[in-house]
Length: 245
Image 1 (cartoon, rainbow, N blue to C red):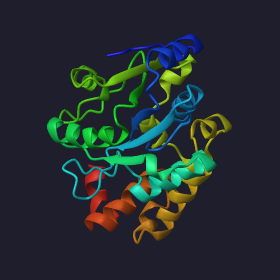
Image 2: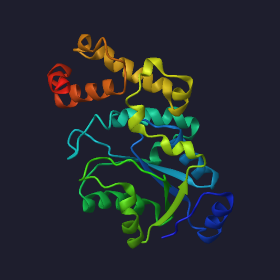
Image 3: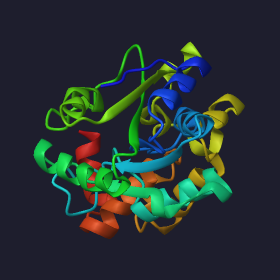
């Protein structure tokens, strides 16, 4: 497994040692997409590689680990987010979804994507000094898969955040923010703040139980509540007693 640290020199070495590598796979939930996610894609482009974006934890309603609270965006919304952020560089033919499954099934899903690129891919991985746990024992962190990737002969390009403060940026924190009262600093952390605000505001407006939420800030939880209602027929009203307790 090739493990590299980010720098112009390392990027050059990668291109010289692996001339057949044309694509870099970036796996992430991006719920929501923030500036570190965007920085990863820019890093891949700067290395002269085509990003292959995998939406991790696609989390459709049939998923074994269906959890719209941690994954507020639908697949359609994920594509809308990527299109907004990438602009003319949005290439849906290089965007895939990956469901949370047991390890073997998850890897088979991933293998089917890798095989489409004829061994011309490298996995781009951004590591942090301290990673927050997903708190779900059944879903390992991506880090735990690196040795498995190596066993399969898959190359891994590991980089680190250029700014130490980027290590403190986590999508889970962004999902709790009052979207209608973001500070200028908070707004800059989102890759597509206006889009996320629009989606959450629309979800609140469409919620049949929105009057119950009138004293609560608009957050990405509104998008989660919409998914629960639309996909699982679970109303906000039915959830409030358990939320209070």
